[in-house]
Image (spheres, rainbow, N blue to C red):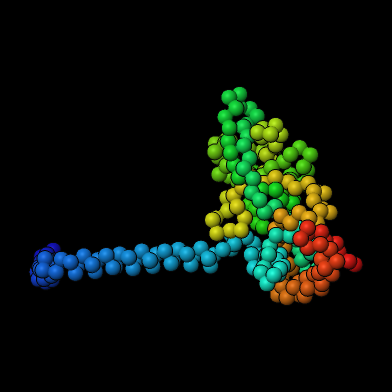
Length: 272
């Protein structure tokens, strides 16, 4: 049995020797051609991998969220161009315009850079993190996986509650608990960490940010501040067209108010 195995191996080696010799001969005689072919194959393979990664990024966008196909961003058409920035009164009224809308969350368009130090840090080592102000209902639209705490804590804004991603918690506190810890912002404000959520992948509408609570009455009647983005989730993806029809009827009233206002100064009102 052993002798037969050795015979087979020897035969395979003998059969491969001419192939290897011929290959080496070709490489020696046509060096430039071989190099060009290898470069071409390398570029083709690299291009294939880039396209594959991009397709995976695009096709998996926002699929980390539960019922991702039922989440939409509110936009309107102005000067034949879609716009996502709207004012808060308009966002609130849109969310309330249809019974098919389960939840609606509002976020400011501008990201902030918050500088702070840990309250317990006597050396006052400064950190800087990107932050975003959102309504408490923002966490009802997107799927936040809370490692510590829950989204209930953000509603109470009197103590300056914030949510942070797990990566930031590990950077600040290692593997220790973060909920209940306080930070001191550069402006002198005190913020209390009420929840830690698991980081989102890069292909998500939700960023791994430090989330601040928007005041319940903040900008609620300000029709001039168009610096908010609104997301909403519907009962069923099939209701998208129904919500769209409700929105068209709703915006017809808004348009009347716009025509009676001064567009350049963005002074609007809603006619009921």
